[in-house]
Length: 602
Image (tube, rainbow, N blue to C red; front, side):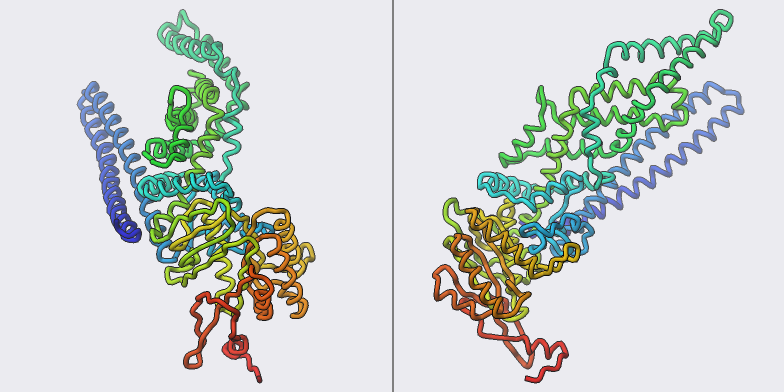
């Protein structure tokens, strides 16, 4: 199979040609529309001047017919071009991900950041250069929300994770489906708009609009009015004009009386008119795709309602009812509405749909959101075929990984192995500045998150147990509450210790703990904290510059020392970012100060 980059590039070329071809056809149809109008007008005038009025009428009808067909064809070409343009942009974005240009994607999910979340801030889940910015391909409000919720609350149930793994594997292999699904989503309007008002409206069924009396009124009264109007013109002596005018007035009063009710419905219909068609196309793509994963098949089955009716067909019916309301924007609609009570026909169609399917719509759109979120995770599996899907320990506690790398770093990333085999085991990571300690902690944390999401991880091999992730890495002062960074760190660690003592299986990632106090207190506090955490059975990684903490390994077999270091060549400092056993034996702070231009006299 071709490399993902090659497949994306081939698709870019394909859709560039497709867009050019459709633009060319669209221009030709525009020219034909103009020629049809001018030709029809010219020949019509010619025959009119020769008093061949039946021919003029025929030419007029033929011209209108051809012109309308060309308008419809032109709109079809425009829709196809928009879709091809969307597919082109998606494949360009996919290439950008592989070339590490994804950091320019506009949607970073910054508004989802929660300072008090156990790990989201420290592991770069949202914000600039975040996991969300890398993988997000959602377009609907509910899809984006679903992806956010998954990233903040990963599963800790092995059955759910394994089901999700199969779903993601299947979607990863379904490149054409994923891209078409995303393209249809990208054509939606007001994508950041919460559809809650749409759900409220579809669930608020008004039975009066579907009553037999309304049906009789909207059928008989307009028919009587048309007959009276025609007869008033043909037989003015027998049918006075005040009869149809009186009925016109009655229609007007009725329409005005119900205008508030109909206006509310039409406002919602107008707001979602284009999106309803988009939802229909997205549902149709999903319902008609053949998947192997049981989880995806189950979602498809749940979209079927009584008599095995596909959801997309019912959304299509809603779209047609909504389209009926769009006649209101025609210049002659006021007269047409007075004649036909068209508002009532539209309301009957809308309420009839709501009666049958109104409570299903929210469920259908949540399913779309679920597929969008899964597709976002699936692109990791497709884009990185050398990554692995993790396995899970069902009873023991631990992590084992080979060639573990940070998924947000370029392909040139340095990978490391890690192994934690026992409850209470803690890896103490020492090393000089810029050597890779903090990045390694984040590497472990973000890959665990991917594992619990059912996604592939950036490793050759990966096996882990289910652990709740807690971090204490980026702690800042809080000016709003008057909390210093040191006290904020204490509160964070207090939470971690309480969770660990409560018996919850956790992994903690602590970076330079107690950095906000003097070295003696920092050493004493860190020493006692590490012992307490180990005694609870929690596992974790602790990075520190305090080399004396390495002596803890002599007191407990569950505390193990690892380090990163640097080397020097020709007066320059270099880092290999490889994790090695033992305590660090190097220092580089003075060297870095001098390199930064700070004069230090040793």
